[in-house]
Amino acid sequence: GGSDAAKRNAGESAADLVTDGMVVGLGTGSTAAHAIRAVGRAVDSGLDVRGVATSFASRELAREAGIPLSDLDEVNGIDLAIDGADQIADGDLVKGGGAAHAREKIVDVAADRFVVVADPSKEADRLDRAVPVEVLPAARETVAAAVRSAGGDPTLRSAERKDGPVVTDNGNLVLDCEFGPIDAPSALAATLSETPGVVEHGLFVGVADEVHVGTDDGVTVREL
Ligand code: DER
Image (cartoon, rainbow, N blue to C red; front, side, top):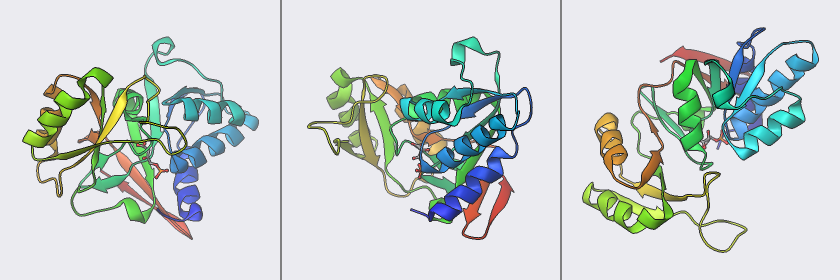
């Protein structure tokens, strides 16, 4: 992954887009965390915003940062969502490294403006990272079979400091599905979405509006 300075520069650059009265989608991951902390500092200085978290982790971080929070079903739309990505190519994303992509996609897609924060290691010419797929636990084998017939190689994501698989905030499991280079992300996204038992996949196709790519000494902003 990229340097912390690069992640911080990206996160703080995106946080500068937050203005008074906004409802802000708060993404998950170490890069979005810098944006959350920066928004928290702005709130300390009087910024009036409401945050909508995308995971247990981002909610806890936002609370620590002092950002007033609302649930997604309490707000009337989201003005801006700031979120990280595992890979970016041609404006499409692979997300889900933090197994939060189901709620992230709801918030990111609902937002009037979805800004990605990343470091250069996330940029690629073509998406080729494993695609995280959140599945209902009972459907993990049937989804795995469907992934294989679509040319993928599914692996149940096991937890680091817990015996057994990662369990998402929604109580589901995650299959990391290797497809190699993904030539047609929207076609693959449709195939995954149509598979019974798939709760959400990590292909964010044509969703992001802008990306802030941090480097150690600055940030590059690109419209997508
Ligand atoms: O889970 C996600 O989609 C996160 O946004 C993510 O994977 C990026 O995390 P990072 O900013 O810590 O690399």
